[in-house]
Image (cartoon, rainbow, N blue to C red; front, side, top):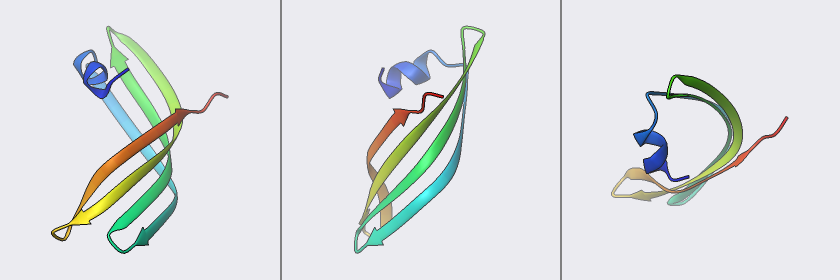
Length: 75
């Protein structure tokens, strides 16, 4: 499912994060984190957890997200 589809059908979305590790090397950086997502769609409340990696690049002294990957955690 794309982000566009998620946001289009969601009345409420809350994402809480817990950072596991970060690394900055020149103009590239990454963050590995746990995401706890709570979503309300069609009056249904859904919760999910995922392990995510975000990769950033620095351009003109600003950081930009260039890649996000999340994998669900099944308990």
